[in-house]
Image (cartoon, rainbow, N blue to C red):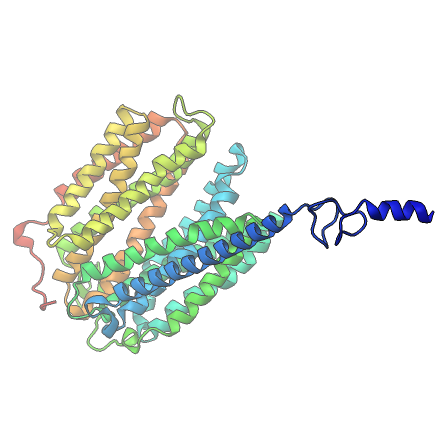
Length: 477
């Protein structure tokens, strides 16, 4: 025994322990060569690289946030408090994007036979309340306009609460999802009305109302663009987590609403406005009514395309695009979003916009694109229709804002914005309802859309106010 141990020890060089192979350092096992040190060094280098990347990403995010805040405060927006409304709208758009992703995943991507019926039911539930809300919401805001900050904050807080409830309803596939989603939608539209009425109160002297609204809209696009991938990431843990993410966003927006400047509640010198012939109140000038009619047609087309094309492209994809429905829908429907961003960008950079010409051009462009898409149905005409609809809607809204700014005296302007926003939202819902009601036959559906747009364009142009029907002289903006 001793002789065997002595021979075993003699086989090792000095400083080597038993079981250690030549060239192996102490502390290494027989299965761990010296390369393990290189592995540790590589892991350390990787960790340092990740740390540097995280630091760089954080620095980039901080820089982007700092630049965004600086842009929101430019041209007097920081002094007037408009920047707070800009930041609030970014949060609002972020929350709405999350809700839209959740509803799309729940409704539009259900079984083909069920999805359309679910959305039809949802729109049916939606249209009836809006028929009641539309004539009542504006007067309600007029009566309680001294608490506009709290009105905006309430729309955010209620949406946060409803999103939390809807998360549970989506997880259990409960029918309670529909009335809760309706409440979220109504609060979203109420926010749009309240925000439009608040903008003139926070308008800085060096910024026109057109550019102020364009800047707010751009903030909304940025907020939605940032929020969409975050909501999609939350959805990877379950559809209900998208709505819980929306709950957090709307909760933050509630705090921002309360932090709006006190000027948002100022009502000195304001009077209610009406579209009727009540002579005790200021009546909207004919040019504003004309711009509203044009924009109603643009919004109706937008609602129609959103609903009709979403189901048409899924159940009847274009030839050669079978099996690529998601990409196809992204190209066509995404073109409308891109067009909207382009239109808002044009409103921010163009030095001069002639509203009366712009609304007519936008309406004619939409009607022409609809006719072309109906006659030559295909990928390119469909994308062109979506892009045209997006640009036209954005430019039409900017022109409407400019017309209200020019023709409606400052003391009436807030109420005019409230009623115009309500009308436009109702027009979108009506267009969406028509898109749901029509059969999914491409040329039939688009042909009906084209016919409606042509008829509406002719009606609006025939009823266009003449030069002798000019608006009542307005106070300088």
